[in-house]
Structures are given as C-alpha cells and as structure tokens.
Image 1 (cartoon, one colour):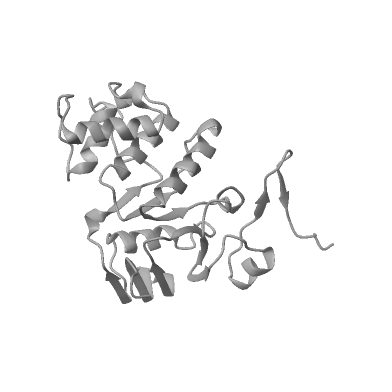
Image 2 (cartoon, rainbow, N blue to C red):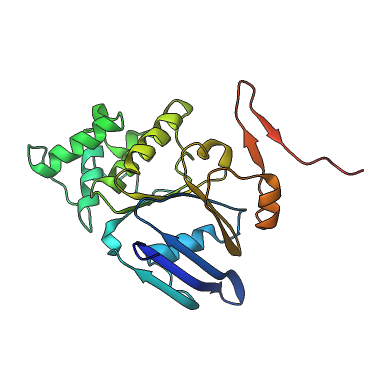
Length: 247
C-alpha cells in the first residue's frame, strides 16, 4: 500500500524463548479505523509496542512514513502519578511537548487549543482541577485530550472504555468517528459488539494476525482466524451468542 503510514512485513517478536508474534503483516493507511481484537496474551500489546517504536522486532521489517511524534497514544493505564500537583489543562498541554511543562492559563494558541479539546470532550469545567481529584472516567477523557492535542496522523487506543462511564461510552465512539476524518485510528478492544458499528476493519491477533477488511465478522470467521473471543450483541436486553455445548 503506497500511502501507508506504517507497514509491518513478516514481523516476529519474542520475549526470551517465548514467541509472541509470528509472521505479522499489516498496513495502516491514513483513513483506517481498525479494531484490534484477540485473547489475553495473544500479542495485542506487543503489536502496539512495535507500531509505537517501543519494541524492536526479532525479524521482519517496520516501514514508517510518519514520525513517532505524529502518533497519539492512549494507554490502558495512565502512567501519571495521581498525586502529582498538576491540573487537567496542563496535563493536556503536556501532549504538545516531550515533558510536562506547567504554564499559566492564557490566550496563547496552545491554551486556546486545549480549551477547544476539553470542550469537545465535555470536561472544560475540570480544566483547573488537580488530576488527583478526577474519577477514572474523567482521567481517561483527560488522557484522550492529551493524546490528540498535537493533531496526530495516527491515534492508538488500548481499551479506551476501561474506565469510561456508560454515559460517555457512546459519546467516546462518536468522537473517535469524527477524529477518523482527520487521522487513522487503531483501537484495541475486548468487545467487538460495541466497536463494530464504528470501525472499518478488524485485525485478529493471536500469535499471528488476520486482517478482515470489514466491520462485520462471524463466529465462523473468528475460528478460521484463530481468534477465540466471544461475539456480543447489544440490544434492549444485552446477551451473548455462544456455541452449543456438547454433552
């Protein structure tokens, strides 16, 4: 794919003697919105580390047509010390630099951009609040704002709904759909039933990687892809669709 932001070609990765990823290939194009699914221990986190440049493959190649600072990243667990005396707006502002830089509120272009993003995520009222006083959902929204403040070409999210309250969950995916008009998105999730209306393609990761160029996938296809996860349907009464048990 000539316009790919990042291309992985036959990538292998191991931790010691344990092989985690084998012969993984993937193109990430500017317009992509890919859901990454797979079982725990299947290699999803390792895949993200390779894409982010945090882990070097054992073999294979990674071709980048974007700089590392053109990738926004929302990890599953924030590495911010909640006791650190910093406000929401300064956490978001730190996404524009390599480190945390406390700035006084003002009308600078950077601060105006911070206010715009906080407003779009519904947390503008929290801008002066210390992060130690935030709920899990508020912290997640703050970290999302930090991840997109630099207008990255690729946004990577690792289980973004982990700490998000139900009220904000649907709003989160609407926001991501809007962001996808300006950037590629790679979204790791354990619940394909929730993300399928929003994503454009699916990558099943379980040692290998199987790419599905659609947001519609069946249990049979998951078996072929060696991706042992459950499909969950959402309706008036949420329920799981599972195989018949053999007695």
